[in-house]
Length: 159
Image (tube, rainbow, N blue to C red; front, side):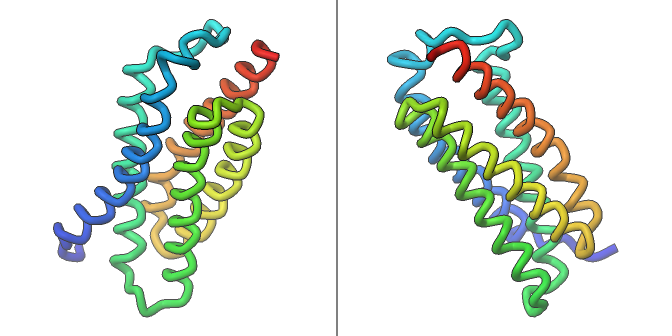
């Protein structure tokens, strides 16, 4: 079993969490002045639950990226996989800006669909490097699938 590089693991988890912190800036600023007034479907989870899920997901994302990086950054395959990981992390943050910051469920839907494909590509690229890393991203893509459906429903309920 390879030795765990604790500082590197923490750095990747903090990087992923940073995306969440940046996204929450746009989210928190617009919940009470916009989001709370939207018509939402009955299956919309409470805000505290959504926040807790994202904390777990960002932790899993960071751990997954660490497992891939641990295989060696000298590999072109690893660098590509981590680049796509960074790309999807940026799209993740952009969704918060699009949906909450710009108060646009339509733009949010476009971004979250792009995010879904970027996550799928990340899983595909992570799998040959670390199957564990790829599996760590499965809860993330499942949650984003649910979030996309929720985003669509909010768009439809708030013409």
